Each structure stands twice: as C-alpha cells, then as structure tokens.
Image 1 (cartoon, rainbow, N blue to C red):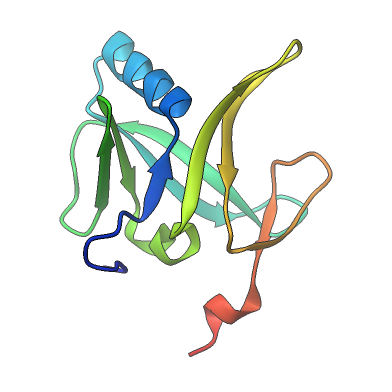
Image 2: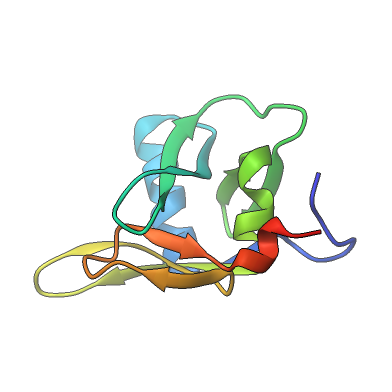
Amino acid sequence: MFSIPGKQAVSITDKAASQIAKLMERDGHKALKIGVKKGGCAGMEYTMDYVDEVAPNDEVVEQNGARVIIAPMAQMFLFGTEIDYETSLLESGFKFNNPNVSEACGCGESIKFDESLFQK
C-alpha cells in the first residue's frame, strides 16, 4: 500500500527480532501486528497484537525469525521506523524510533505525528 520498492517499511534490531521470535514461538502465533490508533495525551498511540493471518494489504517485514505485520492504515505513519527492544532495571519493552513523530508525551506512551504526513 505505502512502500518504496526494495526498502522495508520498518527495520527491526537484533534484540527486537529475538524477542518477537521468542514471543511467537512461545504463544504459537504467526506474527506481531503493529498499528496506530487515536488516544493518549499526545493524540495517537501504537498498537501491538498477535495475529495468525496476513490480510491482503498488510505489509510484512521478516527478519531473523521475527515476522512483523503493519496494518494498512498505519503504514504511512510507521515508514522508516526502527523497532527496538530495551531492558532496564525497572522495565523492559519495545521501543519505536520513529522519524515521523513530532512530539511524545512525558510517559512515552502517546505520540503526535508530523503534520506533513497529512498534507498532499
């Protein structure tokens, strides 16, 4: 739907790929589907769900045993994003390094996208 030939929509770090592959194997799912939805104090937030089927317009990114599916409506918002997995003393989780984000809330759960994504 929204792609550049020869370039993946998102990149996945080795840590993230390892964690995604582990989750998929443990729970028996085919992929991790990533999207965005309205919500949070900055206006949008990421979604992550297990899926067992790929829809016709989904973008599929596979790397080192990990399979990430990007929902069609999220593709323009996520293009160029690096998905990482970080672990610290207090928490661990996926981190999205997204060049299309113009602002994020203090808690890091909510984002606002660059207005140029909405203009033609």
